[in-house]
Image 1: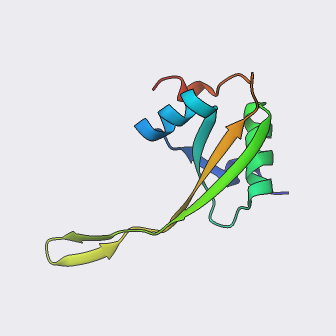
Image 2: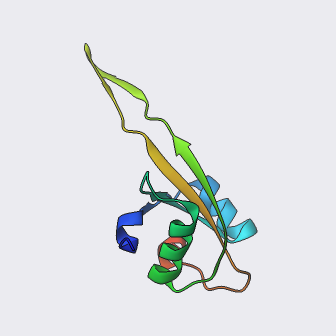
Length: 97
């Protein structure tokens, strides 16, 4: 079994995710590209001590970026929307939004 800290990389805190947290008790994380929904759900449950109901995953492609005449590319990444069970306590760093 992988370490949960290798699966959950960082929280994604935006206006859209703040609205989702208020409306449907859903939080958003950047996750490892090789992680599946089952691993993500178990990692969130073990790290934060909450009950997970549903996990949705989105693969995002990196953007092409330029700095003067030099071009580069940002890396591809994966985002997971995790819906918590009704009545579960919220995760602390999402309360600051």
